[in-house]
Amino acid sequence: MERRQNNGRRYQIVREFLLTITDETTRLTCFLYMRGFQDSEILRALRIGKPRLKQIKDQLAFDLLKAGIRIKVPRAIEQESFPEKARESHSAENPGHCA
Image (tube, rainbow, N blue to C red; front, side, top):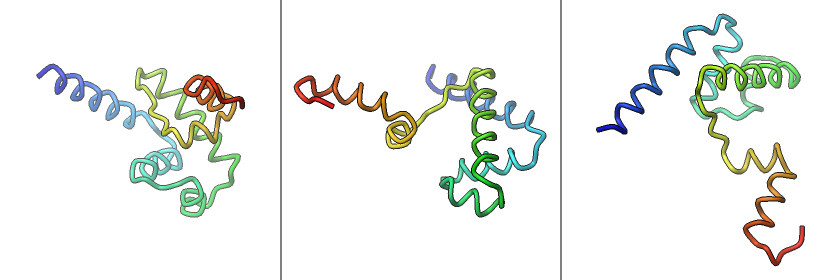
C-alpha cells in the first residue's frame, strides 16, 4: 500500500513539473523522451541542433532535480556520457581487471 502512495506522489510531482514548462520545444522534447525517442530522432523531429538539445537536456536535468524528481539514467547512456565513471565502476566490479 505504501509503495502505491509513493508512486502516486511521484506522478503528482512529475505532472506538476510538466505544467511549469512554458517553452514549447522543451515540452515536446519531454514528450518525445517519454515516448522512447533517441537524441537523433528528436533532433530531426524538432529540427534543432545538438547544442540546443544539450541545452534543453541540461536545463531539464537541473529543473527535475530542483523539483525533487530523481533522474534515472540507463547504464548504456551513463557509460557513454561518463566514461571515466564507467571505468571506475567496471574496475570495482572486476578488481583483477586493469582499465
